[in-house]
Length: 456
Ligand SMILES: Cc1cc2nc3c(=O)[nH]c(=O)nc-3n(C[C@H](O)[C@H](O)[C@H](O)COP(=O)(O)O)c2cc1C
Image 1: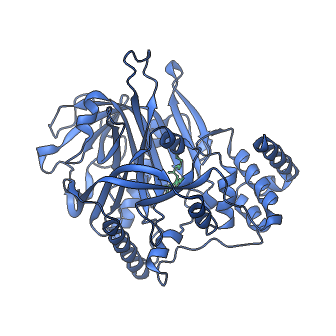
Image 2: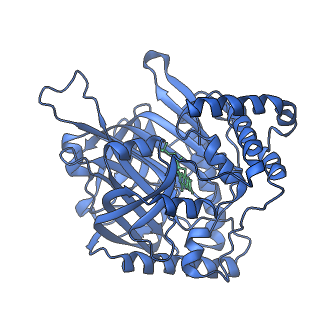
Image 3: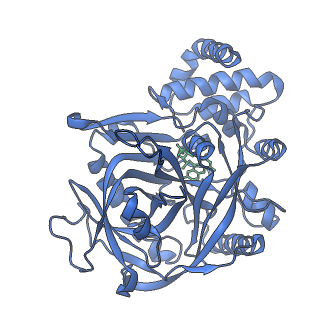
């Protein structure tokens, strides 16, 4: 009731400011900034900031690209091929001046779920080829996916290209391919992108189990922070890359097709990138989000997650599995108030993961909330927004080495391939003030793909 009144009121304000919106439709941040009297977003300056505070308050502004419906088209595979080409071109440019900054563009993260426990897992994987049936992926050594896939074929896969401020997420069914043959699989075509599909520049060692402690995580975050501070001092022209982006996999119970006779639950994974926001004294791995979005709903049903932090610049990756809890409201409010005005408005305007008709709907809501909260000095922390702590129950470490032309299975002992048949593809383009573009394509029977815009 309260929400619907607020919604109607913001709708009204939105309609009143419609002419202003039309003028600035490409840049709602300008209106929000005007309403907020020009409070500037904090810039991502690493130098001179207290190292631990620096992790929590670092903010990268996303302004590299856009993703309109027209740019996206109706065929997700064609869009994926274009984005992969962009990622390769950008990687090659950056690699020439800073060879250790980026992971290979073909490398993503593959997620599965343990059917018994509902625990999601993630492991690095490289896309080797793609065809009409889906993607053929080569998984890193020492992964838990093989065991999971035997009785739960649901899988997720995602790419994150920080230099382009883009991610692509896939969900679908995975088929374990028994081939250890390094030749392309029969029936699978090479990626419809230029150049060979191989891992460029980085080799991964097998995952080595280590004992988790907050000190281990903290030392890792500080090493990353210092490495980036040095890098940005030495090479200020490099694109802003967020060093504290982590991959997060969650899993939700799924209604078994045709119902379950034995009452057994089935789980499906999904994954995305979020920012690590640990401040001084925060235990576990802290991130903030909308509690009502997809991952929030996953976690409400199944409070288990897998997390991966990868930093080629320091040659190390940490992977975690663990349990997830909401942090105290006071912690969320304290962090929320450090965010810039525009992002605070965005947290109100976006019903995260819900389908919206188009970008103007989001922009109008943002303007409505900016006007609504202006008299009280800015948006408070929304009740549905806050932090989660992942408390690791298991932790692994991988070395990321520099090599000229590596493949993930340089040592064939533990390598394996899977074919992922995507049922859903999501393309995420970072935009200013956290008003990102998200387009999701879902298989809709003979009709092909249904495309929807999601709220960021
Ligand atoms: C670099 C980067 C950082 C992000 N940080 C966050 C974050 O801290 N919190 C968040 O909710 N979403 C963040 N996102 C957006 C998420 O990837 C995702 O689109 C969003 O959380 C919705 O996911 P869901 O629908 O699975 O809940 C980030 C994306 C990128 C690429």
